[in-house]
Length: 72
Image (cartoon, rainbow, N blue to C red; front, side):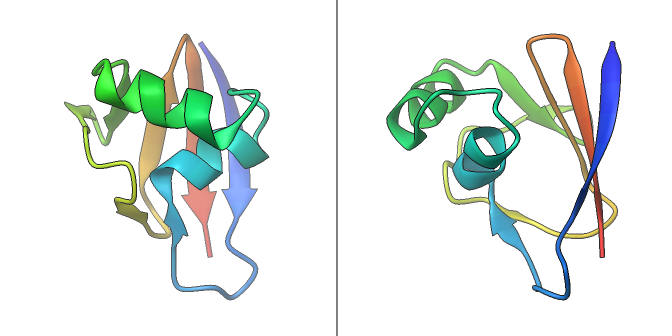
């Protein structure tokens, strides 16, 4: 599994679907929402189905063999 870090750059959070799009794991926001609906994304080891789930520093998002650690 590949792990990368994503910095919030002082922002309090990023919506889950936006993180997948920004990190290039999904081609579009619509595609990101589809994979979240299909229960293919987990946050801290738990399947997440809320597209706008607020991802804050310290959380780890996993999708399709990729892991993203969110930093402040």
